[in-house]
Amino acid sequence: MQTWLKELERALNKQFYADEVKDVLSFYEEMINDRLANGEKIKDVIESYDIHKIVKDMTPEVLMKRENKGYKKVSRSTRQLLLLLLGTPFLIPLGIVYISMLIFVISMMITAWVLLFSGVVGFGSYIISMFGSNLSLANVIGLVGFGLMMFGFVMLIGIWLYQLMVIMWKKMIYWFSKLAHKRGE
Image 1 (cartoon, one colour):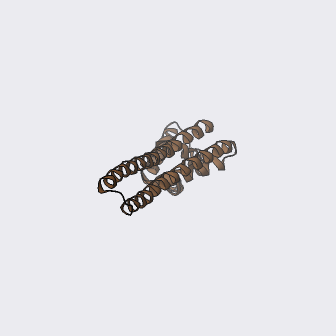
Image 2: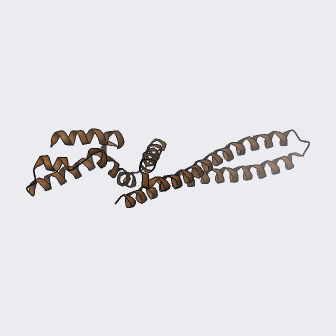
Image 3: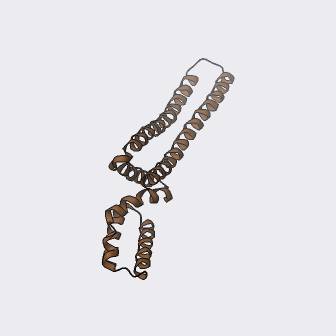
């Protein structure tokens, strides 16, 4: 049994984080011990489990429970979900929908960054043009104040849009993992 559990652990380590591997291993170790307690032979119990199928079947459940903190973890979860959705024939339509929504989210994130960059560049050029004009000091100060308000407004919109898209990306991983889990049952 320990040899089989080590093989399962190696396969799980390729896909999941250490705490996730530990949870899956303890689940299967408990299942095997229960079956052994019911009088089944170890050889029959172990032969009834396919390690690759276990990893594939556990992926949606693990992705649903995973806290995706940080870009690397979100990217890894997205990649794992895409491989699951596109690697399972009956989940391919779901994978196509996921890719479409992912393209939208990423394009909106890029839009947010472009909005932030253009706000900085626009405000800089606005300030330069104000001081190069023949306006009185009071008019320049008033227009610079107005420019600061607009700059702040554009920055807020850009930041909120980016944060909203990050939240949506994380929620999509959860939703599509849940859908894949339900379809796999």
